[in-house]
Length: 89
Image (cartoon, rainbow, N blue to C red; front, side, top):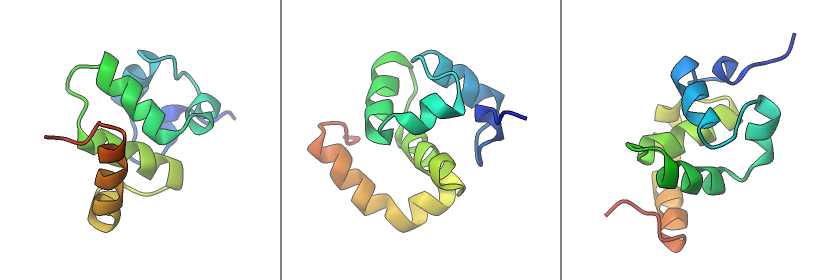
């Protein structure tokens, strides 16, 4: 059976819907894009995309819940987003 986006840890039907808005329709698409570039696309195209979305993207890729990513890697993520001009103000 093919894994769906909603089957990834921390994702659900809403995540699938949001990712489809930026052309991510399969787990293969999702795993094939740089997570920070995906976040950039979401920020540009999907109203309400925030830092938790970045945590959720990384968590789903690594099989962890977003809260775990937020707790252990927040500084590293914020620094990368800052370098990209995408850090929250």
